[in-house]
Length: 337
Image (tube, rainbow, N blue to C red; front, top):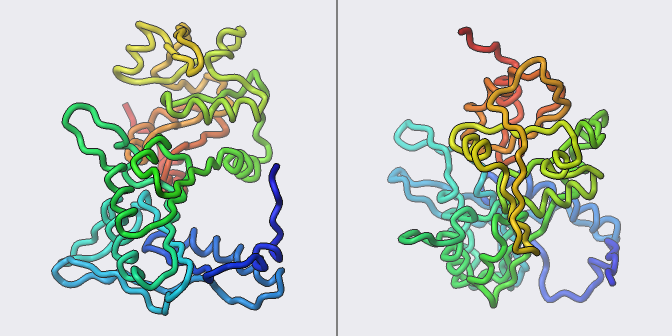
């Protein structure tokens, strides 16, 4: 049974510490949205609070080293530090060069700010939308275990809670069994935002399908399919629908040679579907919706392929998709020849 918490009851509940927010560089927008909701809830409960955010900074020395600086007292507070390791747009200058911050840089800033409040805050929690090191969650022969070691490092530094969204493999929390690890699935919110941005989008079964880029996304896409009332690409094909998979390189060769092979989580059987594979999009192909499930670094490489289609809606699924830059690339003229 779930209990709905009202703003008044949220702030009237007994608490041993005041809630405060700290934003790592690059997470200011998300922290601001969280703060906006908290301030609205506080006012609804009759509490006059302008902001929950504590100003901070991570300045750099001329040598390139940096430090964490928290500009207000945090003694006895319940601190939530927000960090976005997947924000590659944050830059800093060093020796007249502009450098883009990597996930390693963001994680280093997080540790600096944790050190700055260590021993003073009542409790430290980390909100990390994109789990640092999440893609390196398991070892194959002589490889590092970045995500597990990062979680253990945060636990050693005194972090009590980790809050992330749609972790690549949530089983990595086994590395820190005594620390709270919340993996929130924003699947419904994605659909809600999609419909809000494009209210004319049609979810007709004969025109719409959801494609999983890998095995880890199958559960998410099964949710998408059940909510939207449509089927996975495999089931559409088996039902006689006009479905096709766009693939390139070795993946296209694998699909053409061996078909689409899917191992069901709850069954020892593996299904094989001979779904048509296309390696290019033609202007005359009547696609209504195209999902481009590619990494941020691969967006430019697929632009020529996507621009060849006349589909009204192309949805990029991934982290750090810069809308303005992507739109400019989509409207650029096709190369000649």
